[in-house]
Each structure stands twice: as C-alpha cells, then as structure tokens.
Image 1 (tube, helix red, strand yellow):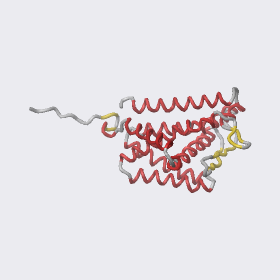
Image 2 (cartoon, helix red, strand yellow; image 1 turned 120 degrees about the vertical axis):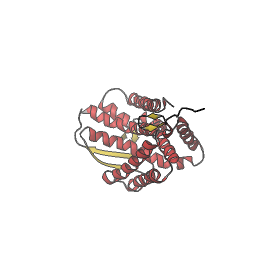
Image 3 (tube, rainbow, N blue to C red; image 1 turned 90 degrees about the vertical axis):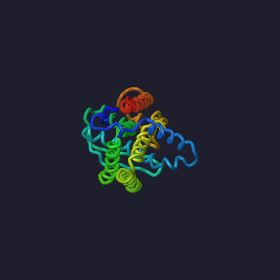
Image 4 (cartoon, rainbow, N blue to C red; image 1 turned 180 degrees about the horizontal axis):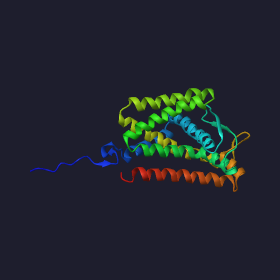
Length: 244
C-alpha cells in the first residue's frame, strides 16, 4: 500500500522544524529564577546585569538621536550603574526630553522582546546574536567612554559573536532566549528605581525627570513604565508563541 508523500511544512520561508518551542524559553526563565536564589548566583548573572545597563543607557542615547539630539557618550561602572550623555535641542520640547528619559527603563524590555521574537527561528536567532554582538563592539568605539565599559562591553560582544559563529544551533537558541529573559526581567529587579525620585546623590531617577518635565508624580510614571514593560513582554510572547 502506498502512502502519499508529505512535503515539509513551511511557515513563510522557515521550515517548521527550524522553529523552537516554548519549552526552551521556560527553561531560560527557570534558570534565571534559580540563579537569583542560589549562593553566588548573582555573580553568575553579573554579566547580564552589565548588559541590561547597556540596553538602558543605549535606550536613552538612541532616543536622543532619533529626536534630534547628539548622543555624546556612555559610561558604565563596575557596580552596574551607568549614565548616557546627550546634548542639543530635541524635537517636541519637554515631551521629547520625557521620551528620552522613559527610553532608558523601556530599553531592556524592548530589547528582550526583540530577542524573544527572534528566538522562534534558529536562523533569526543566529542573525540576531551576530547583530547584538557586533553592535556591542561598535557602540564601544563610538560612545563608551568609561574604562570599565571599554573592557566589559566589547568582551560581551565578542562572547556573543563567538556563540553565534561557533556554537551549535541549540546553544544559540537557548542563549538568545536566556538573553531575552534577562533583559525583560531586569526592569522588575529594579522596581525600586522606577518608584524612586533619586538615582543617587544629586541625581534624579528617570521617573523623577519625567515628573519635572510633565505633570503627575514620579511614582505614576514609574508605574506606567512598569506596566508598559509587562505589556511589551506579554505581547512578544503572544506573537512568538501563539502557534506553539
């Protein structure tokens, strides 16, 4: 008895067997939770803390560029803090400045959502790792101006590029999903910052800066950014895994 030949299923330009399921993302999330609760787990996650700071400060800087400002430099410290400097007038006046302030806290979840979406295909996972690794190195040459950042940021870039170029596709898939989860949860690991008016001696938090530029108290803007981060994460998961 002959059975009809079944051709490989396509979704756009991707074979179905080139797609990763939700299991890997759940594994990445569980690994993150476990590492935060085991001894020395915070040391293991330290590189991802630095990466989240880079996402945060690049969010400020790139938003300033898009709104007509001049992104001058970025500094990252060993304790995981960072600052982005920009100059020049921005489009939309105070609203533009408020958008630049909000782009920092929203930078990591937006980056995480992009990585999660890219992780659904091994092909796009590899490409995204190459882009991320390359952009880390390029950003160092253009904007990073602290000694620690000049060492840490390109090192992260070369490691990510090494995974993209040398690791098997399963490791690449897990790596990009783990990076995506790390970027998304970083916002909620710093909720105290979103609901604070200070970022250190003489410094205002991003929420407080928005308060001074617009109306309503800093905790309102902090809560709004926290909700927006959650919506970005949930929507990215819905889009990426609605057919999983």
